[in-house]
Length: 153
Image (cartoon, rainbow, N blue to C red; front, side, top):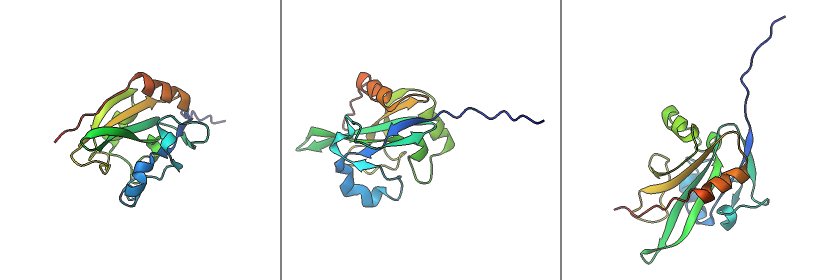
């Protein structure tokens, strides 16, 4: 009798949503990103009506400022699973860096193929919560580790 040891695959559920601010850019983003379950203003504070997806790596949240009249008027948010982040995947080194640990950092939007909502912003906030955790714990992590992105020219 042959017994195979298969690695344990952790799965969790991550929120899958994007702020409605991304809807106007989706014709550009759809060439790079898996579509979220919802475009909603509840993505910053999701509830049970915001869709979730199974995930075997880590949940992520991207946050960027939306500027109006030279000041921050709101935040745009995109949430999901790193497994289903970019349609054609991430470079292995980049993916490993995004998955390996809980983190909160500023990331160059070009690395993530993210079209800017506001001119002259090169950075986006990136939050990652490693497996195995729940979407609720992800929200707690983000709330406890708020990152403010400044405008760079």
